[in-house]
Amino acid sequence: MRLAVTGASGVIGRYVLVELVKRQVDVIAITRNPKNLEQWRDRIDIIEMDIGQASPAELDRVAAGTDNLIHLAWDGLPNYQSRHHFECELPKQYRFLKGLVERGLPAMLVAGTCSEYGMQSGALTENSPTLAVHAYGFAKDSLRRQLELLGRDLPFAMTWGRLFYTYGDGQPATSLYPLFRAAVLRGDKFFEMSGGEQLRDYLPLREVASLLVRLAMRPTNAGLVNVCSGQPISVRRLVEGWVRDCGSSIQLNLGRYPYLDFEPLAFWGVRRKLESLLGQP
Image (cartoon, rainbow, N blue to C red; front, side, top):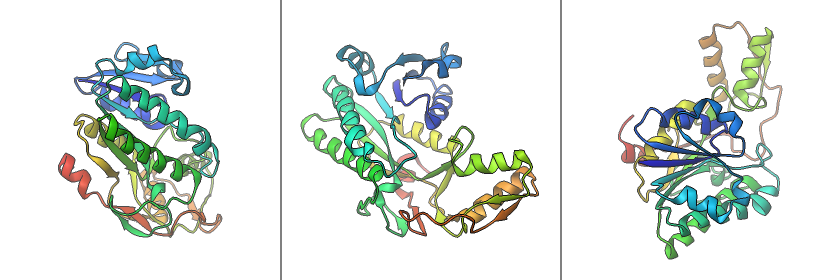
């Protein structure tokens, strides 16, 4: 089996590569920063490419003989409100994916986002409407709709994996987990955070990568799939677990930062469809 990965040198992409090399598959890693993947050169095929400027020859090289594409590339984060997402990123992403389908790519697994659900609260299923309230969620959901329409004319199998919240090493320094780890390493007495009562759906990055790879190894036309734990947890309880796990005496300074105004206080994913596709974990 031959699998291609865009955004291969990104946070999730590097975890996905770890999972893929455990399996008997040929891997194509697509990245603008091949130096970041030097340690993989003897195990995978690395293609240096800007997907926004991919030439016909580059598209041919990716599509030829590829059984499935794990599409993770997306620029412009963490500025979720920027018009860049729908003015620049959306058309670039669609042109690239359409070009691959036109050249015979039979299947793709595209990373979506729980932001597509917008301000809805509670347990969210794949049948919940999409009501994105910021530019990133809107652009992602728009790409999904474009690809679904493309599939009417150029049939291909698509799985849209809606990712919820993740944590792990390698995340940007402004993410919750790296901020916490940095505070512990500095020996800070307090970790400043929000009130922590938000209920969210979190998975460690290595588990997210494993789920994505397992889905990609079964290139079916699965459509929407929540890639989530299915278990709501308060942010406070999550961070308290990190404190226990690392044996730190750091205390939480709750309420230092306000809650985000573009997220509901409590929402999480339902993973019945994920488990029906992959079986119980």
